[in-house]
Figure 1: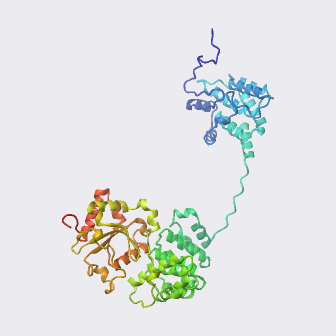
Figure 2: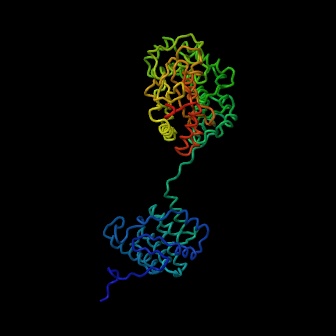
Figure 3: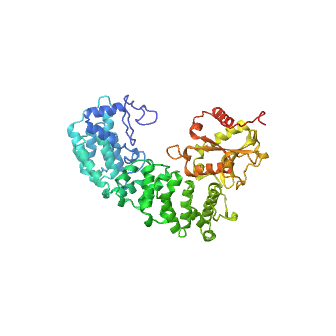
Length: 549
């Protein structure tokens, strides 16, 4: 007894080698060989090939319902007839039969049948080594059917038909592709016209550039040229503040731009408030740059004298920048250390940050201004300056060399002979601190007081830095990591806050051993780093281990 066709166990026809045949309701994805045959048989032009590459691939789940699953859209009593026509189209044996099923059943044809017909035509052309010739009249009739009915297609059916038409080699300038493309453009929502871009000049162009997110990736690009093209009247305070913030944020120590900001500050002195001046002065302290402008300091002193009582936070911010430049004006210090100013800021929301700045200014007066005889910050008002590592160090901790240097010191000296991240009075955080005897032996930190007295013991100014062991036989050595981001972008000048910390630690009597990032980055692995640290410590005359005590 013969087994009916299609039952389990029956032998299915073997597909021709190199072809990819799709079953009913499945998507068709022609193999490279069959695709090439289709394109060659259709005499594909470069325009068609470009269209073939640009149109997105067909999503099989959207080619309409198949006989194996979903009912056609709308359902209804005639759904069975619609599914029956789809089966006939999927099983057509020739292009002529395919066209006959479409033409003889106009009441049963739905929009999703046309992608099925085009897909089946591709299967007929691509599944045989020698595809049957297709009469030009047959393709024209099929094109006319689709053109006549495409106004009723949804947008996805139009996309699928357009994709399959290009795959089958229909001319890109032919009536079928043009009609489908026109319907596609008609269904897409119109794009709003681009807004008119105003013509920007000088300062406006610079302001737009500095406000653009792309500028953050190219911080040096066109800065000087944009500033040079601007007229003096176009350089508004807002533009100059943006420029100052840009330089400070990206650590750009550009002398031409910094001098331009200093000149602008001097020229516009009468029109600038202290809140604007604090932003203009910020890059000078951060980038450790004292401008050549002769009137820079006299101008700031006049602004501070005029507006110190109006904006307390702006006043101490300006003094902080000047402290980094070692240019503290005595008259302004007299004002901010006065009881009236301190009482005024005590009840404000920014009281803590102002007290921290005042504590740093008081330390600068103690260490750097021996001729100052004015009021000082009362001891009860003082707070630690930097009670924890700076935000930049915390943000870039995974790029820091601190962990590997700590491991090198642990293996070289032992855990008891150094302290990491110790904050010493008046509030400076040290990377690594060692206690060393007068003979150079590294001592266990737990047996010594790691802190030098602050304020420093009464001695001639600068003697603590030049001879830190005069009063105390135990010398304190601070290993200072100089990471890449501790410098201006040029990599040679320390940022103002870093230079201030090292300067003050040296004046308090700590002996500094800088570890520059160039040297740390050149070490390959822990053994090399240990050898590097050994050479650095021995160059200071330090001894450890059994022979060092």
